[in-house]
Amino acid sequence: MPLRNRGTANRKIMIPWKGWTSIGKESSMVISRAKTIAEYAIRRWLVEQNFAMECFTLTMDGNTGILKDRQGDSLTMVYDPATRMVCVAED
Image (cartoon, rainbow, N blue to C red; front, side):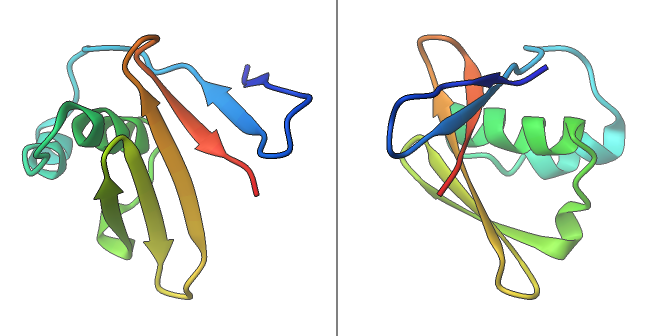
């Protein structure tokens, strides 16, 4: 169940990341391209949420990832290293 951070203008949905569990072989290929721990965590979270990564592009900027689909819609995610959680930012 997502935790909601209320009371700020730029709200975030806190979504727990399950940590370093094993995943399928096809998913590990997507994650193996990660260049940082933040990117690894975000890619791993996307795989666990059953995103079909071949339909999206992920752009990383530090601990922030922007996922875009073919129609131009986007989803912004932030990896928090202190809590080891991926947060989905709401606009």
